[in-house]
Length: 239
Image: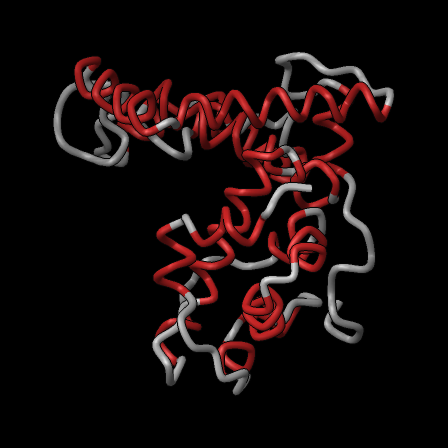
């Protein structure tokens, strides 16, 4: 087994996020995710602080590290200036780089994020791109969404929004040179390789599970991880 604690110590987010946790529980008290999910940032900080490789492995292969919303409320309240949210970031990164994220239900769902937000940033320059949010993928949006999709250019024009064209505004066309700059940043920082790792490990997990896997958003594996949501994630009484 790899020395996961040593790898974590080399991550600047871990170094800045945890220095002297006194286990007061303030981070858990302020955490919105802890109120809803079976999640305790204090416990995670305590676990990694032990340096116990087996316990850190359990975090990397479990659901808990994926409950955090990265709001960083923990950072604002900690009396010792720790940031469990940064520790979570380091744990998530390590889980995805090693492929351990596919061991958990919530971990496997990172492929959905990669194939939506991750790829949209590189393709369009936006982390959320309206035309990609189709009714096939989001049937819960209903007939209003379908009507909007059918009339989107005219609708946005009536609202005075510059859409897929040159000019100011949040929906403007991103120049190709700007997109290439974004892609260059991803290439130089290892972001492209990181996204490829998510695909590689997800393909391996799909084979293990006996599910069809390809580039489509609605292949069997994508459908499974998108739809599966166990009942063990939330605190009883908050459903």
